[in-house]
Length: 251
Image (cartoon, rainbow, N blue to C red; front, top):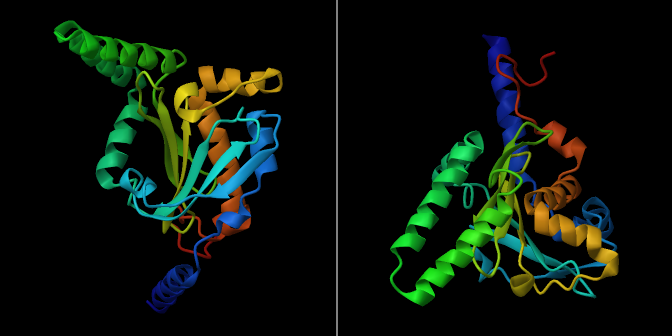
């Protein structure tokens, strides 16, 4: 009984200490490792962004930054730190989990629905718009599904997924819970030259090919690098969820 009480006090103390810690700062994000991971020639630029517009679709952001390159070849990625559960709500998490578990069924279902909308469209402009959406969807699903479950080194579960698609291009987001489960790190990228303003050149061909053919991979790569910068392994290990049947400090 005394041992159980002491273990409970340890857990309570650890939780209180975690809550007292301030959120990680965007200044921890360094561009060079991002460029290396995505095989972009660099250099990349990081700038603060207002959170007012981003909050409409991505939860409750504490801060936001944008990543770009001076020559425009990187396009644009947004990085947000949001309150836990404000983007990965229970409903969102359940839907992403189902899509990750059944990638082919999810893709086939969306494709069938789009094809049906195209067939039923009676207005030429509407039909053309739907056909463009279908073409974009087929493009981004050539190499697999639209959602992946990501198991982080600290045991937390995140996701990378396509949020939307259309003639202007698709939007992709990686959502990774913080080690202490208080925040979510979001990385948002795009697949469209029109929307992103990407200006590929001879030096960025490898990166551009990846963005065209493997946008989920690129989004995950950017997210992995930034997550490691914001939540170093030592921090992640100290707040790693205990395995079933074990209490903190038990070996």
